[in-house]
Length: 203
Image 1: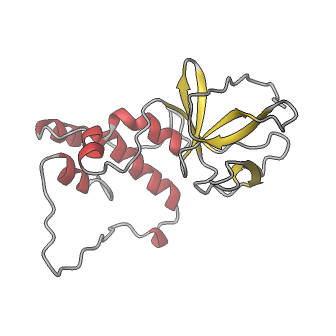
Image 2: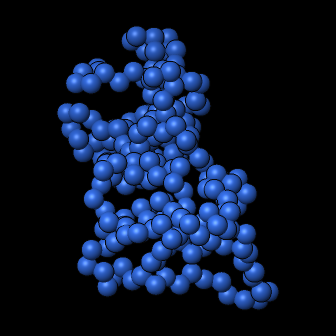
């Protein structure tokens, strides 16, 4: 790995990190974004390279997060020697890393979509959460902050949309004061799903 990845060897292959009392711990990057004219591509290249070597079972999630097709043309070079080293050292997989080292990371294995939900008539508006206490969904200017980012999970061939910031789900609840006796909320997930019909506008 050219920039990222050496720490994976420590965490997943039986190494250890020792912090000496009263020492100063920091991360020194060999890659200077200010000196790279194509920062985003270089970072994307490294992310795909690390994912290919160290978390191959989650490569599809990485591609989705970076909006990359499965047949992307990002050249990561020959990583066979690194994969062979990983296998030779009997390194743990990424699921083990999450469970033992980084348990606060929420793992979603059956994710099918990731991003924001936009207004079809005005695409600079995204579905957002007004306030966690009111559970009221609103349309705000798109900003890609965590309150707008959602992921879709397949459930019985339908999608359940939940939001990264609060893990609330977009769903309907009974409301006698509403016109149709139902209100759209962002609340605790109850298993409700949405059926996505291509080329059809839902009102």
